[in-house]
Length: 224
Image (cartoon, rainbow, N blue to C red; front, side, top):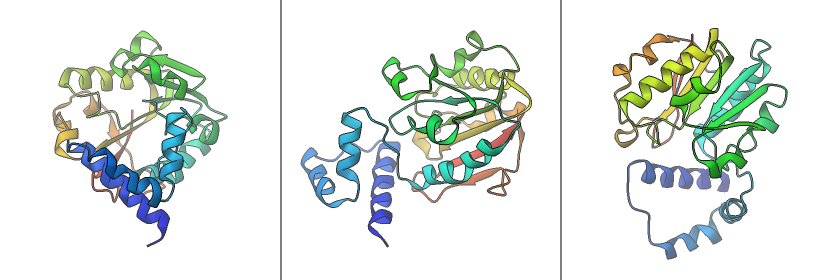
């Protein structure tokens, strides 16, 4: 296993601990990866400076190397929305979707600087206040369910508005950590999610892809 692969597994282990609600380790223990883990010091410095900080995890590699290129090259996808912003998403428009009409939405005002040039400060369940029906060709909602989108009523409203804001046959990508703490609502009980039809994503040859991560990050592909 290479240094990069070992570092990736260590990042994924820390994300898993956070996902299941384990308390963080003692601060002094973080000095060890600072000096020994490949890329750790650079990531810490970039985050402190508020700079784009790509996340080197298996699920992000699948997203950035398999999923994004497919959507980016699809000429039918012209207007798209990415839900949720952070230092690890700040490079998405520039690197992957420079020629798309790219929007982001995020309720935290402090995260706006990591969003697209066209950015909305609002939760996903208020999407209809900002965009007309049949507006987007693609909506990507990744890492939001269980990390802020937690109640049944929130989920019903969010997915219903994603459905109504998509054009007919538009794409909806839904990604979440499939561990108990981060699945606060049984997905099969969300009627608005059931409005979408499953779609076999060509690059992965499945409509639901579970990544090789301890937090079982899962991508589900839908069409309206």
